[in-house]
View 1 (cartoon, rainbow, N blue to C red):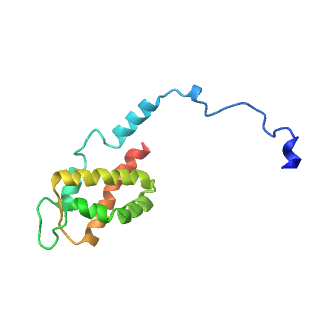
View 2: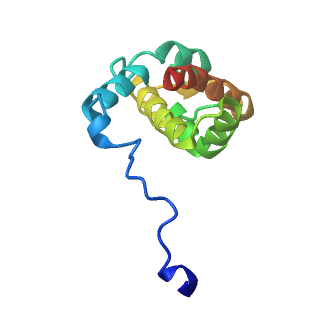
Length: 134
């Protein structure tokens, strides 16, 4: 540290390529676009997919609620979907929370063995990836 204490700085430009004064958009506009892309304005958007994977009524030995199944397998589903889609786990986690909330509202139940149910749930995240990338 002593050898650079009296030396002039290596970079002396004051250019700030990421300066806030150069921004043309507001945070409000950014988050509004993001909400639209992630489907926050359409709470029933994934209802069809959820109803194909889960059953509206308890059936046979699989009486587990869909929301409980999603919470229990959240880590496996998020890791699988993240690896498959290349999206951040945080975004997929937010998406999973929406699925859990919506499956609770629809009172859905697991209709087949857990191992057969995990993959279709992870595949729902594909539209989430396409929305995030737009």
